[in-house]
Image (cartoon, rainbow, N blue to C red; front, side, top):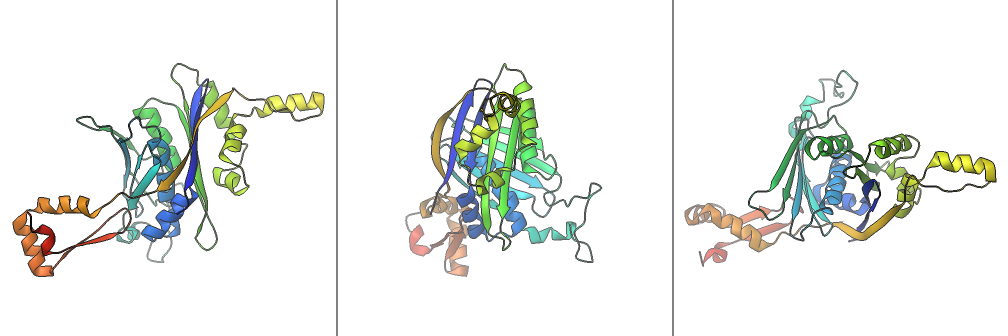
Length: 312
């Protein structure tokens, strides 16, 4: 399977994560047989998770993002690690589809004219770093845009002012064309002016997926984000040439591959099954002849028969 790509770096006032998650979202769509809405929403969550996972300190640390909304697409979970591996699963939208479809089979909109695919609910961020208890952050969902929700989480739960952009662009036939995103966070002790300038800049440039479709590398996108357009225009008027100036110097610290990867094994499922107890296992085997389990993350199925439990 092809791997996606991520870079991270820092500057005087901020640190940044940028990634192209096209192959990750393609794999997730294939594994979970996602419709276009689910592909877009779940793809954005996976993109956020893989960037946040790269910020973990230990090789065995684990980050989990869990969205719990009342809408048909409001159940999603993504988990990622420092290695750049991410996986996840979504709920079944058909169970709640009546909440956004009326008797005429038309989408129901709220007072702002928006369809509530995710709905009201919460975002839970769990960081398992090998301590007695994992860190758990909880915040409300900030509308339907997962990018806004992540920025709101960073501000409220971690007191970090951030710019978060997540995107998934689909082809007319529903296939994934491009997916990616970036997180830029203000470092402690510096003024908000850098992020304010960046937010103004984002209004002037194309979306992350459009930039990727246009052939820009992640390195070129970082350069674009840090470029000070107003200074360049002033100097161009004097010299006649476009001179690039940057809001501040920056440095790329890491470039790495990222991928949708599930580490499930038959042994892991076995350990879960034996917690049912010998009596319950024997009862299931008697009724069904075997025990079949399926991984929520990758769809892989494992079959257990009586001989698998002979050493219990």
